[in-house]
Image (tube, rainbow, N blue to C red):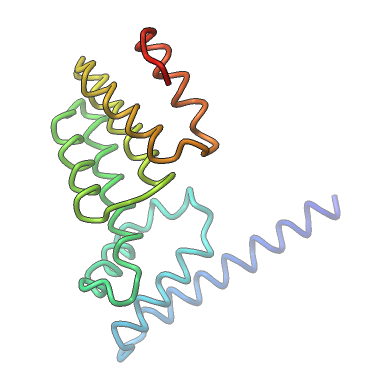
Length: 168
């Protein structure tokens, strides 16, 4: 029970810190760059599953850091676009999802595990649209992007499952 109560107290303290940061970001007269940094700090303190509910803050960061000089635009733009692609997949709009994934690759240029995750998700769109060549290309590219990642064995298993003739 003591550990649980300690954990609850930490969650409460963290929640209060996030609330304070969001309040600071909303202060009149705050410089845009400072606002973006404070919003980033607030988002980083949130559990990942709660960040998805703060798209307005992410959009604000992307707008403020339009030139990328603060180093925040890519991180949040990718998150926002991935959300849009997921929404398109949920509505069976695979063409739109693929277009969004392609936009992420061309504009944000993710590397390594980020690229791998993105290509697997894009492969899902090809799978749903029954485009086996597109699926295969995505999975093979995903494996090549991060061959030693934690997800690599799963990607290899998917290749083997869908394309038994492949040599991963």
